[in-house]
Image (cartoon, rainbow, N blue to C red):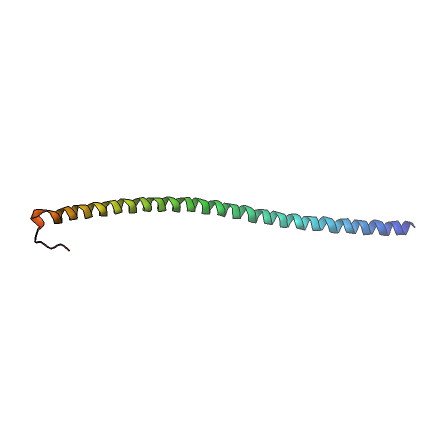
Amino acid sequence: MEVEFRKQDKDCTQVLKNHFEQNEYNGERLDRHCEDINAANKAIKRLERHMDRLEAKVKTQEETIEALEGVIENQQVVMARFRSCECAKGRTFG
């Protein structure tokens, strides 16, 4: 009977050792996953900052386009007035 207890004790010790090793392995995997998640979060933050900069550039470009459209409209008005002026009669403009 004592031999049977020793065998059961040895079996339980081996099972516990196996569980401990599996837990260590899982802990290491979890650590790697956490590192990967942290790296991904940093990359997301970098992308968000980059997107903010790009959005600011787009806004600036849109404002520039609007300003240029205003300049073109003003030039068209000036040209229309000049064409209707007496001094421009008989002249051709490209």
